[in-house]
Length: 467
Ligand code: SF4
Image 1 (tube, helix red, strand yellow):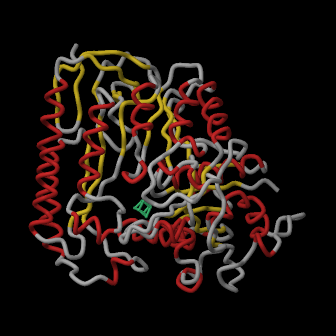
Image 2 (cartoon, protein in one colour):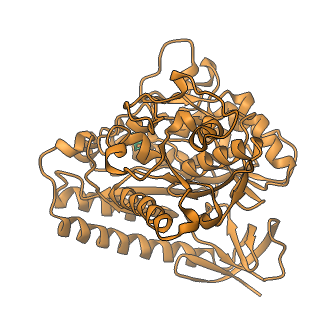
Image 3 (cartoon, helix red, strand yellow):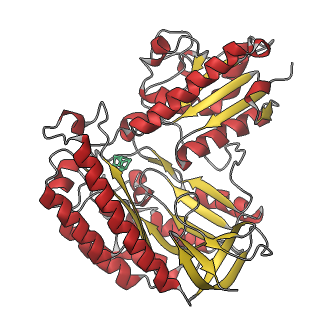
């Protein structure tokens, strides 16, 4: 029997890689993939659960799939699987809330997706799942989620890439050892576990050989790469990188920089606690490492950093940013902030606005605090009225937008290297895919290739190449 599978992928790039891993296993098992849910024997919804809005979008997608199935007699036999962060986070609750869903799977079941589908369909000769591969979080037979996930992909893991040919995400670790008080990710994705450097380098080599021009290194905390494997002592959450103790982000970047070919590699999701002078020197010295760093800072007020349990002080963040700017010429820094955290005063917020003005981040975003069940912040006193949160978000956004315009104005007349994303659209080293702005370029420039051009003007968050 030929089995056709559809997949709806929600959430961030980390979840996208999980979708790619599932599709890779399905293709390897000989199943057909379809972008059209109507044609699927099995529809997987890979969900996100980071904050309330993402949760709601995921729930809507699942119920939308259930509704569409019941409205179409041709889909009556279709099976629906819920995967991803929502199902991992609410493993115990979802089977009761979603009686129409046929299976719930978590992180550890990503490489088991093909046998799970065979089980669901009762396919002849379906492999039998052992207890450790099967139900764990509840007694519900539809529940395959195991708590405290361990899975992390390797370079041998089958993968069916969903990004355009010229850029790829590479997950260098999974999980997070931090305890930021607003965040549920460690509870969902488990403890930090790094891949080996050799595994990452081999994957990047294969991607570059296949024509990929941009590698985006991701994980919950890329700067912690390798540190969980150190045999000498156990690094504290605030430990800086020290490559003399074993593999680290610095050793990884230097190894990737040796790979032949024309490409750049970009660092996303770094944590300020683990930066070191060695990492700054490495980025400056490696010509294939984009001079772009994503470093979510969340706040700058000492009171807020402490309440958020960010294990960094305002002074150490300011010092780090100065060292980064001095040590890496041409660096573009991207960051994100959270406003309206419980207990945030007008003075805390004003300090954050002043910090934005002082450091003038090349790329920045701001989120309103989202009250998430199961986090420490959920229990805190001093939750702010939603109008206060919204008003601070608007003021912060206005500041960041003005700075973004001034940053773009300063680019006019400069010569920049870009990677052509689609006809007429390119990105500079300061523009991560699907996050930052873009450059409007000549439609004749070949997609997926680098080009050097002069910036002639700007509009909003985008630049416009001179003709
Ligand atoms: S570093 Fe903090 S915000 Fe980021 S995933 Fe870990 S706990 Fe969440």
